[in-house]
View 1 (spheres, helix red, strand yellow):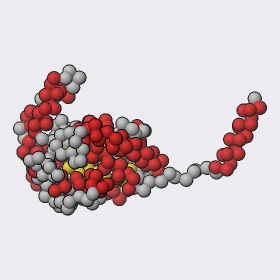
View 2 (tube, helix red, strand yellow):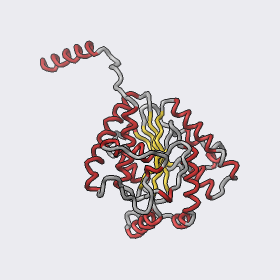
View 3 (cartoon, helix red, strand yellow):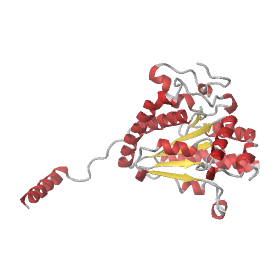
View 4 (cartoon, helix red, strand yellow):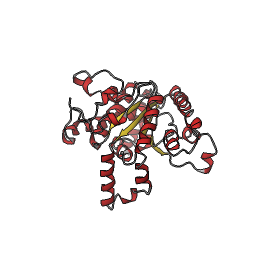
Length: 303
């Protein structure tokens, strides 16, 4: 399979793919194996697998959204488990786009989004996970972190907001925190949206030329871009040190927005279905309720 100048995402600590349905198992293809060394600049951000165009992937995209809708209904009804989706990526990687597509068919009652920007004074005066734990999903919920606790080993490291001996200890603290959530019934999926510097600049131009998108432009867009290499190294360490069996990272080729959405929607749908969710039993005596219904129906008919 031709991958252009980069390597196939399957190179992230995996053997090759199989055939048929297994060949589309994006979970296995893009998952970072625990402890695997990741080189993001060796991964082709324009990879689209067997699909050549968005048009050819539309059927699978729609099917995945339908799978998500059905699985979310069971998750919400069961209320004993939850799902946490973590989205990380450099500026213009498409975090908002993923949220807009991935959860377009879900019931908003069971979905929440949290965004972790610069800490407030109160948040900064406490441990870095304090504000994050407060946003962990409740039973039956899907929670999306649009940026997350990983900012404290990415931005904090690149901009030297804290000393190395502080941010370097945070990897183990994050692993312990995520294990705690998992033991309390939360399934965790973490996605690194991988784009190329050329694609980022193209998206910056789209924002510049489109008045509807200009509100997204930030003074920091270009100063952060100058730190691209440092951010890649920070991401690579975070991926290697915090991808675990219970809270895996997935590096998603994201130059093509439609493929990004296809891969993530499949991985999330697969994870929800693997949770073996079931409808809870009725909380009332159905025969008694059926009798009351028929009585009410008879009274209604009698006027």
